[in-house]
Image (tube, rainbow, N blue to C red; front, side, top):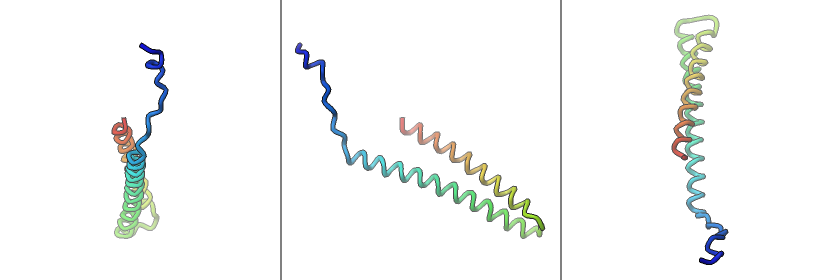
Length: 90
């Protein structure tokens, strides 16, 4: 066997179409996650305000409590989705 059989330092050409589609897929996945977070938080604060107005509570504590609960739910969902994305990339 020749020595050049063992020294195969040639670079493998990268498929640019596959790389571009992978980048667009990642962009789509992460932008979807962001919009889900914004929607969850927005609905939580909006719903909290509506409930606060319905019960005619003078302070905004009910709005704040429901909104913060929505934020916690959004961040929990974010971590769960990121774990799934990381598992799919492996």
